[in-house]
Structures are given as structure tokens and as C-alpha cells.
Length: 221
Image (cartoon, rainbow, N blue to C red):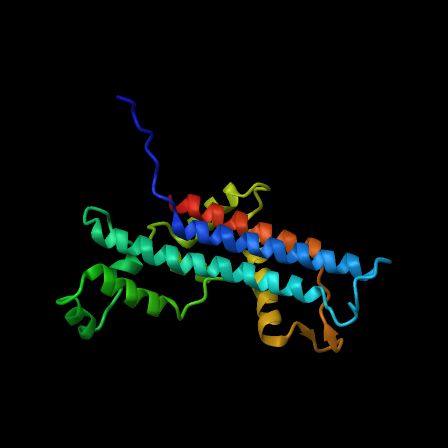
């Protein structure tokens, strides 16, 4: 009888995150191709109305959103797993998580998993997991580690092994730029024009977010 090799269940949430990050990379490649075509001598039609930098901005926003979306799904999924595993100590934030009486009544006719997944998805959906402090607050539902310990371990896992202060500052700057793009059309009001953006800096941002998420995933275990 031939033995079978155990195949672990695919991590759907992580798979979606990496797919989203790949989409961001392709947007940058598309923008770079348009940028190159606009300055070439090839007859590719009228590219005067094409703004390649908008693809870089879209990729920037999408990359931050990919991180935010993955963290929300990961936190809810891990929280439900902890609730179901009674021997596992509850992190303080999860232990103190409050629900309404209506939610308790819903559990009489529906599974606790379904009710709590919906409840936590809706409540945590009001939070933004883009900046360091908010990310660590969200992770507080599913780990006993304090904020300082989380970022210390994340920094140690990043390839360049930057300081905790650098990691938090870098992620804050990325999130701030995302907000300027999404909410202010990336306009520098003093200059009266959009802020410059390039393919290399956008690609570097995407890779930073991919590596940051990988480190967070490892810290959670």
C-alpha cells in the first residue's frame, strides 16, 4: 500500500493577500510600460491623455488596502479559533470583548461561530489596520504579546532588520500617503499640483507591505 503525503489545508486568506499584492505589482508594470511608450518614437496612438502615474497611485492604495483587508480577516478567524479552543488563554482584548443581549439571543438559534464571526467582522470593520498602533491594537485580540513586543519581533524578521522606530515610521508614512491619494487626490496644496510618484518608490512600497505582512504572520505563529 502506497503511503499518502499529508497536504495542509490552503491558507485562503493569505492566498488572497498575495493575489492582491501581485495585482498591485502588475499595475506598476503597466504604468511603467505606459511611461516608456509615451516617450518612445513608436506610433501607439494618442497617449497624451494617459496619466501613467495614476496607476502608481492606484497600486499604492491597493497595496495598503490588501494589508488592511488581510488583517481584518486574519484577526477575526484567529479570534474564533481561540474562542473554540477552551484551554487557550484569551488575550485581554478578546477576554473583554462585549456583545449585546441580542447577540446572545442569536446564539440560541445559530452557531456561536457564525454569530461571532458576523459580530466581530462588523465591529472590527470600523477600525483601520493601516498604521502601526492600530495594527497592534487589532492583533491584541489574538495574541498575548504587547505592542512593543509585536513590533520588536516584526522588525527582527524583516530582511534589513530595521529598528522598531523605523518600521513604525515607514508604515505610518505609507499609510499617510495612501490617505492623501485616496482622500485628497494626492494634491500638494502649497504647490498646487499632484505630488510626484515613481514606479521604483511604488514598487518598494508594495514589497515593504508584502514583507511586513509576512513578518506579522510569523509573529502570530
